[in-house]
Image (tube, rainbow, N blue to C red):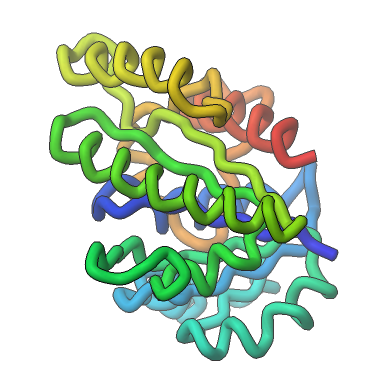
Length: 231
């Protein structure tokens, strides 16, 4: 069976799809060489469109499969996909409807199957407020699954980090306080805001122990921590 991963947030533009691609690229390539499938259930279909563009000029063997599914199709096929992969990464919309219960949320139908939910925290008051709302929701769902004997892990991390800015310093301070309030781990390595990450495709891994490129070094350190957390 695989490890089913979601990068989740209610806020758009925090890097959910980009992180899904960066992680899938690394896991499917040396030194990891894992069997990976990415399932794109987000209505924007960012990953599916990117893979389509990448494959047009690519003559080799694609490093992993990208499946363009809606949520019902995901539910019908996830058991089979789970059985034939090491990792399954699901790109899912973050929309929440505050007028309905946790069980009725569409996103719950995906999180119902995950093993690890990684939540990117991005600096800025609006982004932080939205992420905290999302965290409250997924903590409720985590409690529900734990009561059913099907626990999953929620892990927070800082994304798009700008070390010397006032907003980033405020975010780090808020996360320090949050650690004392909720029982979830936070990754030690922040992912910084590099152009290389924004320009990622669905083919190339940025994982490199020997690269002198700052972005690749940052991603490699983050990826090493990711692998430790998902053992």
